[in-house]
Image (cartoon, rainbow, N blue to C red; front, side, top):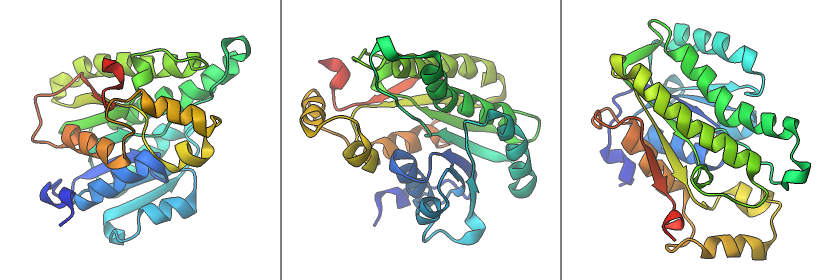
Length: 253
């Protein structure tokens, strides 16, 4: 039996960004196994369709959009709510990193990461908290990073955007508590994904050095998915404003 089959989201609708690959794809598949209905957002139609394989058509909606175009997000989410009804949960997994030394870190490179890592997510939240768009006692989870807690050479912009995610999560948790909507984040360490294996600018030796800094070694997508499922689930109703480190001990060293 799939371990996620023992958890039931009771056909509640959950929005997942970054669902076409990596951590977002793993979280989407885990939620599907937990009996959640899904609105999957990604940039690639083909890989997004792969994520939705084996999910009945009536239980999933695919949206291929460019989240860097923030002006389109609120109207699009309004149309989604009109089609499927109130949303229960939201997980913002979409994210980008542009590793470069500070002497070539331009305002544009910072804003590019900020737009995806934070603003796209807060725009979706802005749409969902409008009257009738989100269930009372809903749940929101942002994927942050260990780099919200520690520094890294070449990661000034990325650290700044992930630190901003943590600050925004705490503020939203306080603001939305009156509606019993919970807001949390998960900060993964190094996780094996297609992007980290093939799309990284780092050499194999550099990646191995990063893995060695994790006492429990590198993580898997399923490790992050378990944490997200825990925070999203309606039974965990007294957890909000927190950041759950899933990093194999990286930040403890």
